[in-house]
Every structure is written in C-alpha cells, then in structure tokens.
Length: 110
Image (cartoon, rainbow, N blue to C red; front, side, top):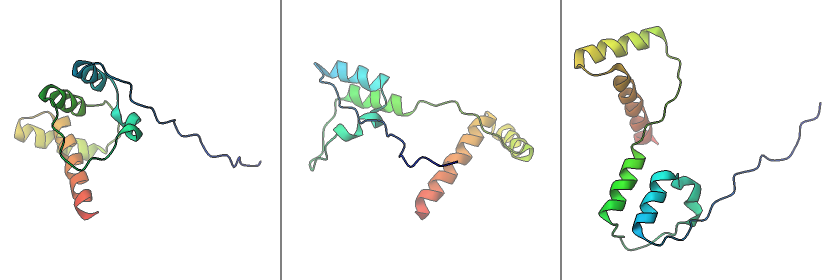
C-alpha cells in the first residue's frame, strides 16, 4: 500500500472583520478565538491603550476553562483528594494547580 505524499491542509487564516464600535469588537472577542485571526494583527512599537471594557472582555475570555478527559493513575487521584481535603478545596483544583506548576517549570527551563 502506497502512502499519499500530499501535505495535510492547514486551516486558512481568517481576516478580522471591520467593527463599527468598541462594543462590536468586545462582542466579537467574547465569541471568537482570536488565535484564528493571528495573521491579521500587526506588531506595534509604542504601547497601546485599550478600553477597560475590552481588557475585561479579553480577560474573561482567556480565563474560560475547557472540559477535557484525562486518565490518571489511582495513586494520583488519591493523592490529589488527600491534598484537597487537607487544603479544603476541590481535588480537580489541586490537579489543575499541579498541571500549571509543571507548565511553569517547563517554561522556566526552556
């Protein structure tokens, strides 16, 4: 059997639409992933002052959590639950914290 040599197609970069107001842009940011529009942004030298409502909308969007499924060893779950009980927080919060700490360590060494 012969393998195809065609490269998988990348999703086409999207262009940002024109916005009539800051409110329209805030609504857009709330409902779209700006990573799909990364090619539309231009680098600027001077700092940009953003509307506080826009900053709040971007922050709210960036803090959303996404549900995933992950298989853990029983000992990992038991340890997370014991830690959570001791700290009086949900065990999934402990697991998220451990993941975040691992990512931060990886960034520090990269």
